[in-house]
Length: 627
Image (cartoon, rainbow, N blue to C red; front, top):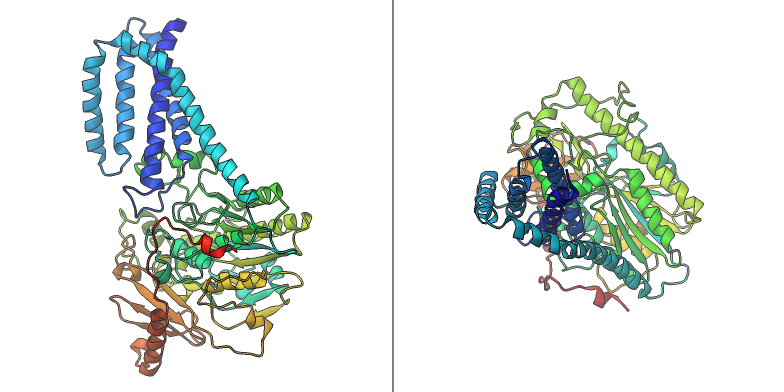
């Protein structure tokens, strides 16, 4: 094949690949980044880097088609391949653009794209030389636009961070670093630290003996977005407005915004790129935030073609980030690289490990390390009223044999051990850098997990203890006491007030849930303390038999009782001390006095936390924080 014939095929491939990709990237950013057509679709989010990523992916796709055309031209020399290939490029580009909104079904997209391609082809066959010449002449401009898009997006991001860091006010001399570690989906009672029958957390056990452990920390929400939003704002979900696929808005300042206003570099590092992400509003206040696009697979997954492949292939490990997830070592590396870039200012970092989230797929040998190791507890029975088509993963797990289901629990426990080792590695790296003595570390989780408890699987489905009881450790050598365990029920919503107090930062921002530091600083005092709440809105993505499918749920936990109320279901009341698995519902057994008392507590607590009027969507409370 002559160079001229190759050019006639490669030039259209490059031209259409870049143009299709740039338009796709802008469309994805509008639809899934800004939520213009999908305001309630946080999970599918993207960020502005998708513009050049989509251009790169489409360039590869169209070049493959061009190479196929070159092969066809070699096999059939008399065939005028450009006359066939350019209309094909138009068809593929139209499929790409028409599918962007997600509003059209596959039949409609293919039909419309075919119609446009046929109409174009009628015109094109009469203007082949002129069209190919136009593509050749304009290709340098298209390439220049693509290169400029890449440089502008990456360069602007780099410059913004540099300028913002340079403008930080001076921090208080000797201000400590603060690191919050969230182990996504970690239920407290699967840690050896909390009495589990398997040694799943040996390194955390050692860390805990050098710090303060809370035995009864209650998560405000049984899923990632709700819980993280509360930990970052110090407000419950019904206050900060977060709900099912509803992002955090600007009504309350976030913890990183407050640290930023006091001279801290702020960094977020997320492995749960579905909900602890920029699209969910949780990156607000972080000067640096790592979530999407952490690997080539992640980049491809968030382009349109990656979404299509993921959606229309059978339920199996593929490009889905639940399978090909960012693992703890990568999160550690992102954090440490960021710390090393600038040691002149204290840092506030918030990291999320995703390794123990379902599907439970820790690396070998962690996946099998607990096979055959007794937990002393037999797996509970599971509600099998789950639709295969709507919930393929839950259906598959709920219909496993008892042995196979036990292996799911084993893999989950192995994943805990894996993360435990990675936390030990992170601590060793902080020690190497001389940061361990002046860094306050908080280790916790956003929610727990169900393994047949109450007939349920995974989370985001109810407010039982196995989902809302999470670990909590405060560790700061020489500043927090060693070996202290606090049994009082506390809320994870106390995180902002606590770390700000320990860091010595005074702010005018009000946090209704006070710092828990007073519980170890004044151990003989039992202050009036609000009982922790937990809540979730209705979730129609669940099986119909699951509680949260029926409507919203709210719960309150005091030193003895755990009350759960529902929009439609009868109340449930458990004596969690005597019945930690919450098998006996006292609300159904006639304990009316306790039910009445807890109900009054719950609704008084909810009523005392009415949110203020919503501020303008783009307003920022930072100005009111900075001094």
